[in-house]
Amino acid sequence: MAIGVKALPITFVAHAVAIVAAIMVLVWCLGFRGGLAWEDTNKNLIFNLHPVLMLIGLIIIGGEAIMSYKGLNLRKEVKKVIHLVLHAIALILGIIGIYAAFKYHNESAIVNLYSLHSWLGIAVISLYGIQWLYGFVIFFYPGGSTGLRSESLPWHVLFGLFVYILAVANAAIGFLEKLTFLENSGLAKYGSEALLVNFTAVITILYGAFVIFSVASQGPAEDDYSYSAI
Image 1: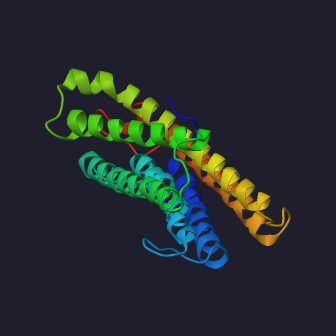
Image 2 (image 1 turned 45 degrees about the horizontal axis):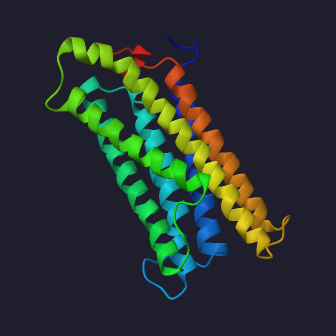
Image 3 (image 1 turned 90 degrees about the horizontal axis):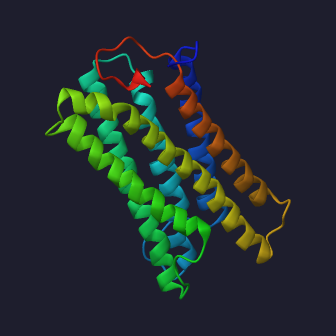
């Protein structure tokens, strides 16, 4: 079931929004927060890896993986590989991004897993991993039977969208949480950095919305068991 709009122009807009979001989070972490580092006496630089990797990895590259089925006029098998690889990259970057947050907490003597954002983050990355493994085994290798793939596809799509929406929502919560901490430490509530963080969260949500719209739109004609089955 699809809305009467072609997917291609929606994906073009989504790509543009993704670029804007990536630039904004980099400007924030590099320009306002001092940069990125894996090892440094300034532990905040370690934390800065977290929003960069989670947004560019899990949200943007994960979104591109979802849109690949509707935005690329290629053979199904080619799109399947692109979809699988992009999701794998998103998952790996997401895991590194979460590890960076734990590393920052541990080296700064801050307790872990005390907030809703952290709880949802663990849930999202776990579900994302399960979704990827299931998709790999059923749709790629060794591959399920024709009947199993046919029955699994709608649930695979719906569950994947649920996890992605949860990831976008949790990213917005993460921006809010970090900005609240900064404002409680003296950051101006209407200053340029606060506005940048808030607008980055808004752009992130907008990108997620375009990703979902692309799934519900009309993609190119495909063969059996394509992503457009939803």
